[in-house]
Length: 243
Image (cartoon, rainbow, N blue to C red; front, side):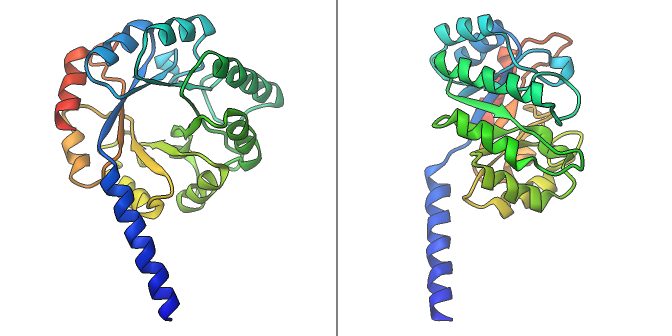
């Protein structure tokens, strides 16, 4: 009994240290070169580079990756998603994802964003582990495929076991505002084992609501406020002001 109490006390101390070392930071989803530069110039801590906003983001072409990397000083993660639609991939698509990771590692990116599920809505641990291993030592984020998993608690443990460092999620809701209670619960379950990054409809108009409920973390937004696919510099500034 005493040993269990000591173990729990140590775990609480570790979690406290983990939280106090952290701070709120901002990741901007960028669908073009212009957004990446706007993000950097207006205080973003990191970008997620992708294409095809209407499809929810797909793997960017290598020319765009090279161009952005040359001019970006802040960290740059790249999404690995060969198409829109579901997150169940064929062997051919998995091979394509592996090749993209190999190629982008050589181009000096700082991390990857992907997520693979099974037909039954469970995390495909085998395929995800293959990609995480291939990406090593770069960090990997499990993207919003998490918002369509069948069992949140089991999927959280599976994603952690795969070696991901972050989960991007709206709390399985249409947007982060509607998913705020689920986000809070997921973050509590995750503890210091993985970072939970709220994303999906995150704007300066609702980020304060999340800050009131969540521990310090990364926040994810496209900062797009019109019908274009380009980030609004004023929106990025407003987001940073809250952080």
